[in-house]
Image 1 (cartoon, rainbow, N blue to C red):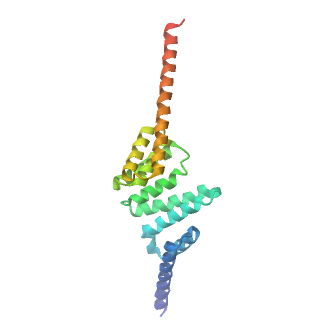
Image 2: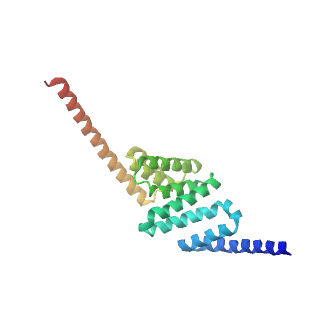
Image 3: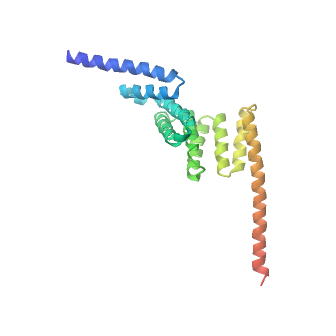
Length: 205
């Protein structure tokens, strides 16, 4: 009798978890989604193997972070953790590499080490889906932060090839083309300066 009661209690918890998953997936409220899905996973241990729940949690935390600038860093960290769990559960999903990179870039603060990690995630997303427009756009943005404007331009061109009507991508391409022209002008200035210093050292005195 006690075993039957115990089994019934477990079934009730699993049933409740199933309802919470449904609510958590369907709601557009990020805070509610986090509450429902977290409780569902707590009630049913089998849900810890469902990458979709952690993907949804990552998205919910990301949206919540964007709406709460004062706690942006802390909430983004929770988004990153959940995307990483989802990716560990399903490493063949290109979206998860993109989501993780997109969450990390807001914490990178133009740190080259973090940006290189983000590039690696986007490279894997594009390898899994060679027509991944958003991944090319984000990789173009990442390259621009690193000052690699030629690579950035190439990625924006690829993104435009996938979706020629994206005006934001076209605008970003023009900005990077301008940045590249400035970079080349700066390289010329540096070269002339170095040449003058060399000439002074060899011909003066």
